[in-house]
Length: 211
Image (cartoon, rainbow, N blue to C red; front, side, top):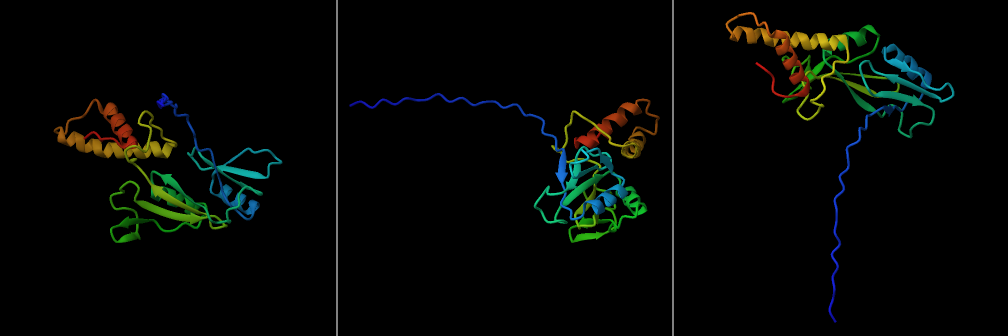
C-alpha cells in the first residue's frame, strides 16, 4: 500500500496596522465629587459626558488621552493607579501646580547612586521628576522630556501641544544655534529659520541633531 501525502499550501496574511489611539484611562476613586473638585483645581479640561452616565471625564492640558472615573467603572482599589505626565519644563510645571494649591513633591533626578534633590543639572531628557497624588492616593509622576528616544515618536509629525512647549523648543534651538554661528566665524546665519526647523524636528523625533 502506497502512502500518499498531501502538502497544503500556506499563505501568510498581511495585516494593515490600524490606528489604535489611547482614548481614556479609568481612574479608581472612592468619592466622585471629591475627585471632580481635585481635577478641576488642576486646571484639566472637563469633558462633556451624558448627564445620567455617572461618569466624570478630564483631559490634561495638551494631552490626547483623558481620564474618567465614576460609579462601578473598575474593581481596582482606589488610589492604586500610577501614571506619568510628560512636561517640557519641570520647573514651570512645578510652579503651576504649587500655585494651584496642589501638594507636589520637590523636583528630583536620578544619578548612579539613586534619586537626588533638584532637576538634572544638564536637564537631560527623561531624568527630572516630581510627584503628586489625588485625594485617593492615585499617583501622578511628572517627567521632563525634551528629546524623545529613537523609535518613540512618529518622525513624520512634529507637534507642540502648547505655546509654552513651542517657546521652550525655540529657546533650546536658539542656544545651540548661537554655538553654530560661533563655529562659523561669528557671522549672521541668514538661513536660521531652516536651521531652527531642522533642529526642532530632530530634537522631537530623537534623530541626529544639526550642529
